[in-house]
Length: 338
Ligand SMILES: NC(=O)c1ccc[n+]([C@@H]2O[C@H](COP(=O)([O-])OP(=O)(O)OC[C@H]3O[C@@H](n4cnc5c(N)ncnc54)[C@H](O)[C@@H]3O)[C@@H](O)[C@H]2O)c1
Image (cartoon, rainbow, N blue to C red; front, top):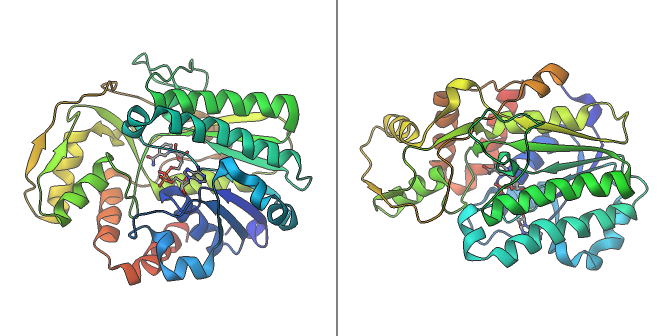
């Protein structure tokens, strides 16, 4: 499968994080030649902190706002494809530290594009934004819906999205693809104030699970479906110098309330969690409905994993010991793509 990815030189910004580590391992399975640029994740539980990951995926630890230090190394690598995932990705952190959020998501993105200007070999650029880029008016969101994230994180992603389109149309003229994805679940995510990591951390610490927005509905997607979408877009023949935009959304049945996720997780773990409902101090929309008809029509992508299966796979990895994490993640990838 994906024979065209063999030996393909792919530069991945943000490869040490949740999405980036899965993507790196998948591309490694397809024998691509990957170079990652990321900050080191401070939590040792991230897959990127395992010895196997460090041995298999070449990573340069560098802030995207300070790329001059590694420009020569990247130029020497001569990437054909650049995937940009490096972000401050947490809504709560956006409220705590808006300056850092805009600096990373906006100015960091500019630094990446300025670097791409200097690399002739780059043909395709993929920028991962979010479903939160949209002005959520409670209608089903398609790629043509208006942008307008309100909280600092969402606003920074809306800006990143517009900025990417502007840079491509004004300077880069590459085959650029912007991916706007729903909420992703899967093993190896330790981001704070995200539902599944919060549940698993509370279990570890034998504490109650603190939950906000229990009645909020979100589009829950398994990381394998997301990686499948990214890889389909990476392997799509490059024949454009324009920006194409695609939503990645789960099936309708996976667009459920937080409380449904809690019920399913308790079933899988055969346990009753102590749940503490916290007042949500930040503004979040009650529901967000995303459509991915466009990527289905253009590339036949659709979400393969149902919610129960997605949560099963997720919990399995959270219960895996650190020294087996890389192999077990790889196993889930190989089974999925087989
Ligand atoms: N996880 C989700 O549910 C979700 C949903 C939609 C969109 N996204 C987007 O996906 C992308 C990846 O998110 P994630 O969940 O993997 O987050 P993550 O926090 O797990 O990973 C973020 C990555 O960005 C890197 N990074 C952050 N600041 C950096 C800096 N200044 N310089 C260099 N690298 C830096 C980190 O080192 C890490 O590799 C982000 O753009 C996020 O906005 C995530």
